[in-house]
Figure 1: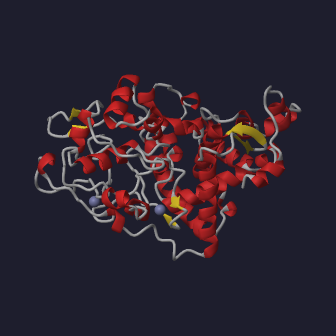
Figure 2: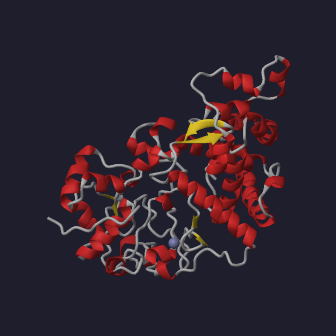
Length: 420
Ligand SMILES: [Zn+2]
Ligand SMILES: [Zn+2]
């Protein structure tokens, strides 16, 4: 029986495995085996791997032995997993996805950060308590969601790569939830990346090992007070929607939708903003945020053109759908999309989103349709994005088309202000 360790608030399974193995002075691989989770090796049998999908959920036959070995309650085990976040975050909720199979929720889902985990150096450094001083702070679950781009507590943007080697800090190149599972020398807050060297054999190369708690947080001091305020306000609002005690419903284009679905709407609108950039440029909250989106959109347009040239429609859409890796661009596009969705009603939303929908259709009809009618988005948003001038001739407008659907309720504008 293992000595246990209490999970920290919002701690992800990956970080918990690192902290517990550090406490027990065993390799993460040994811990993984003792807790009954599956572990396999790469084709050359040199590198251990643990499946990414455990981040989301443990199969029933794994969950009970894991709870027994770690002496955690079922609720504590659930608290380490991403699946419960799906109640409020659509991209983790099988109800809004194509596949309900747990092992597939994470795979190919760019709206969950499986490899490119983000972190706040100061949160990782711990809160000063003895246990966090020894094993570091929590690698938080919310850092796995691309809608988390800043640490409001420490007033900085999150980082996503190692400041020393530029590599992925957690996952290796072997599609494993954690890299270097057999390395017993790394602290939970050290970079687990293996920088390339002359040694061909990955298993004997040294780790980067940079102390991530010493990393500078994302630079914010050079930004104007208004830009900083915009970043924090947006992060606070999105985080409040994800909180356990957050609202069940929220307004999207003037209609009440489950919060989880709101994030599907947010995903569609950010994709549309990127696809049609610079169409929405006049709506940027500040000049700095507009510039961040200029650079981001430019990269995406180039990627899209390349994929199209290669004749790949699916990957071409992904050029606009994947969330922003740059925290500043993420803040910029989420602020704008969130503001569009908070329009008082469908007509106000149409005035903002209609031009983008038209522009997208003009740019590339099939890809624009994929985005405008994206899986899991709300009916009112779909109608706003799919209705164009032609409908007006038949006397159908956005309002009549939405009202034709049963079970939809208007979202009072007064609540919009409260939920800010
Ligand atoms: Zn922090
Ligand atoms: Zn590194």
